[in-house]
Amino acid sequence: MIFLLDLCQAERFLAIFLAQNPNIMKAGIIMNFNNEHENNHRNNMVIIAVNERSVSIHRGQHLVSEVKVAGDVPSTDILYKMPDYEVALNDDDKIIIHGGESFKSSAPSGASS
Image 1 (tube, one colour):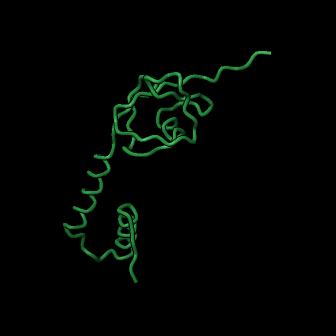
Image 2: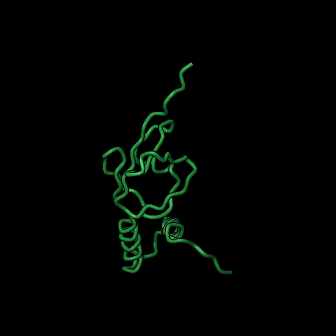
Image 3: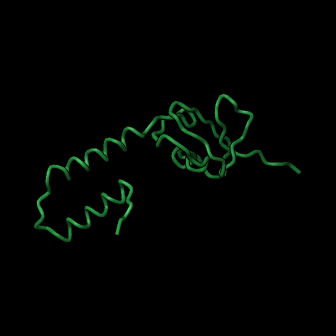
C-alpha cells in the first residue's frame, strides 16, 4: 500500500509516530527533515502592503478574502489592488501573489435615499 503525503502531513505523521514510540532515537535525518520544512516555509513567504502596512503572506494563489484576513481588513470593506484603484476586487476573486503587491481597502459607500 502506498500513501502520498505532502510535507506537512508527513511531518504530523512523524510526530505522532515518535510520540507513540518514545524508544526510537531521533536520528539526524529527522531533525534535517524538520529544518528543511521550516526553511521551505520561510522561503515561500513574501511581503505585500495592505493599507500601507507590511504583511507577510505565502507566495502563490489566494482568494481576495484571504488577503483581507492577512491584512486585518474588515470583511465588509472593499479591497483594491494598486495602482488600479478604480477596479474593486471581489472576495471570491483569485489573485497570484508574487511579493511586493500593494492593496488598499475602503468601506463600501452607502446609497442614500
